[in-house]
Image (cartoon, rainbow, N blue to C red; front, side):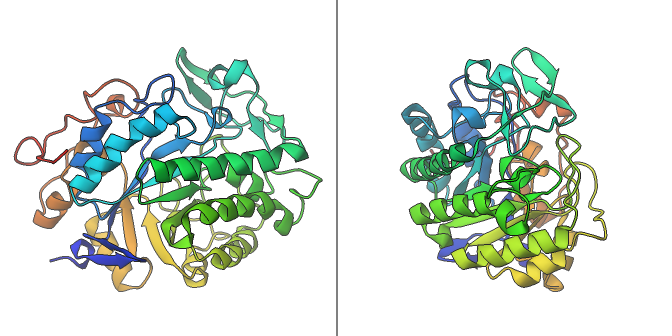
Amino acid sequence: MSPILEPFTLGDLTLKNRVVMAPLTRSRSSDEGIPPDFAVDYYAQRANAGLIISEATNISPQAVGYALTPGIWTDAQVEGWKPVTAAVHANDGRIFLQLWHTGRISHPDVQPNGQSPVAPSALKPEGMAFTKSGMKPHETPRALETDEIPGIVEDYRKAAENAKRAGFDGVEIHSANNYLLEQFVRDSTNKRTDQYGGSIENRLRFPLAVVKAVTEVWGGKRVGIRLSPATTEPGKTPLDSDPKATFGAYIDALNGFDLLYVHTIEGVTQQTRDVPDEVDFGQIRERFQGAYIGNNQYTLELAEKDLAEGRADLFSFGRPYIANPDLVERLRTGAPLAEAPKAYWYGGGANGYSDWPGMNGPVAFRR
């Protein structure tokens, strides 16, 4: 038995193993941000993970950056998530909701009334936005006014409350992948001159206010946070000028909230595990007082090695979970993993989403 596949105690949660299903945007929700009925099957099939982190979920209409992604700001969205969490629990699984605001990685076509996306500063990202009418170039966002920021903090608070109503076991704050919170953290995307910009302390002010609001709803031991100090995607975003100082200060401040875990993208998602010299994941592991979840291109062998060396406590798998709903059993038996063509990753219906077979046919699960 691999130690990765043995039970693990995470805070007050007993997990079946150290395997985490990473958040996977699949773009199957309705125009109103409601998960489809077949999302129940999709998540229940994958409840073999010790912990599921849901696909990134918008906290408000302003937070939306991609078409057909789910939300958690309306009663209808809450009701749409309830069967998902119930099915995961019926299969002895645990599931956290990832709270998401995309900031400048958006487009007027997916914003309310065609408004401009918001960001700490009016800096246009590179790359394309996924809209219902196809891929479109990102546009220059509008810099948030100082007095707008507390309202977004309250959007996070309401989303955290709604996640509790929907039956989730906890929440993960998405402060990674160059979305809104990380846009405030990095000095490459935050050029503000008010109390939310300039010094490291000021750049962390808004993200930490979000953490405070969310932990006031859930308590720290049911809240995790995702970070990505080394990634440049999406939007070809430059790194912070001093990631060790910035993220070291971030971790030290996060310790004051007694968070359950930090979930780090080690390298650049879908591209590489290589890390620039100015980024130190070992520092994050050493300084953070909760559990550490490693992510990005993990195999069972790499996870076993990192666990033995004390580099991480849990390990999240993303793309392998698309075509392998029985991933844990495949890891346990050494069975080969199926590969999902990229055409099935985003958009569509149940096909290529909740209809992948296991090694021995359809994956049995309870509703």
